[in-house]
Image (cartoon, rainbow, N blue to C red; front, top):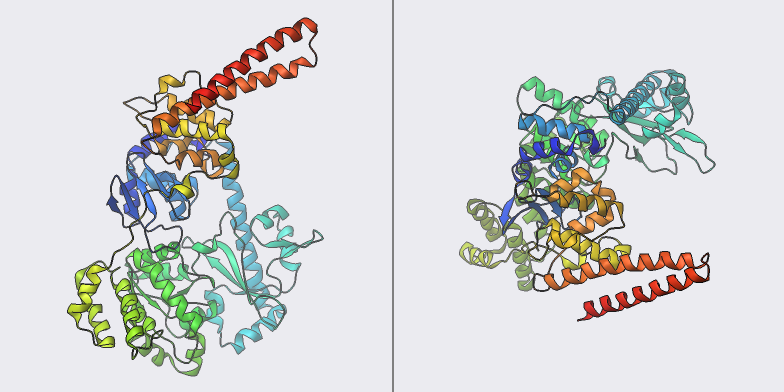
Length: 597
């Protein structure tokens, strides 16, 4: 939805009641450093905080992945909702009424499109399920039976079967869905010759259902040995983002509603059939990600349902690496994490077939704390009988322990390191205190000076950027009264300048306000303005030079226009034009000299 749905004035009021630091702090742990607040970015994996929240100008910026925006953008991206839903969340928290928008045609169109996509996905899920339960689905039923999947699980998880490349597509077209809707829903792919076909053809299908009960996509598995990827997930659509989806989260929400409180703990496994096997054996608090690395969005969704996670990932080397990384992702969310290690490189489904649900329960009951698991796993990479390798292990272990929040936690795990190395805790604590944690850089000048190559190379655009950035960030050398004759070429530059000219001491222009007036995500120039860096020692000189550069461009444009007129001018007119061109050349020369001085 476009930001134009609401007036800038209404959004300014909403944001004035939704302080960005307070809002972000509900989701992330922030620490004040200097004028800004810093935390671990929720939009990409990192260990050193590069996510900055500017309280004065009410915007956020990650200097690692580049994400930026105002408080509305943050809620939209973090919650995985659309613009309207983000507005409603903030308005509810701020005690504001959302203006009526029935007459907004753009909003109406987007809502209709989203609803059509959701309806198509649900219709596809019903078609696949009915096909699985029919004679055409017998081959898939045999596969499930051989895997030990019972009829209750088939129903609970809404499993289905796509028998071929055409049936689902044709069935939905007959129901009145357009081919365009099927494409937008990610239900059909297009071949090289332009023919459309079922994206999940000849596969066992698992509908992916969100916490609101909507089918938002599919994960599908081959049932025969073919030259295809084992699993295929929906492509990204207006309702589906793989980095947000947790298989089985809808069943966890149902369980939470039955308990009238958070689920005591959630077990996280790797595959859909692992989830099914766990549920069949009574572990109905099990979920999985879609064969992808865990993300902060997954952690946030899990945190809504529980405070405790048990990682039950595959017992092979890849599973061990996934476990280590998952711990790092989950820990910042405030979840308590334990790890249950599967033996013999088995996955949960294989373990339950080889052993029993009682053995699985014992495995879960003996799960170790995440930090303990990490320290033990790191130790496997070192020969602790070697003095040099033992010293290297201690450095790695202490760096990990340093990330803990409390001295009590640190003391507990220092003792774990002592048991592995026989180094006294007092010595370990002294080394721990000497470890320096890298502080986030306020600004990485080389990375953030410019965004796009064309902005880097065009001297006039660079000057425009510095002028607007200086005004936006209220630099002491930036005086709006000196900009009466300044002009801009780029439409977004003009829009931004108009906003800055309206600034008053009572209602100053803020970086956060820029996002209400310009589509910053799709404006490399405005992104470069927001990311602009300054050297206060040379700021006044650069400002003066940029004003001159802006004037120089206006003269060059005037000169270019006169030169175009030469081709159609008569003799007298050519003399007059030549005179003006000569005068302009003198002005340009003076301006160049002014910059060089």
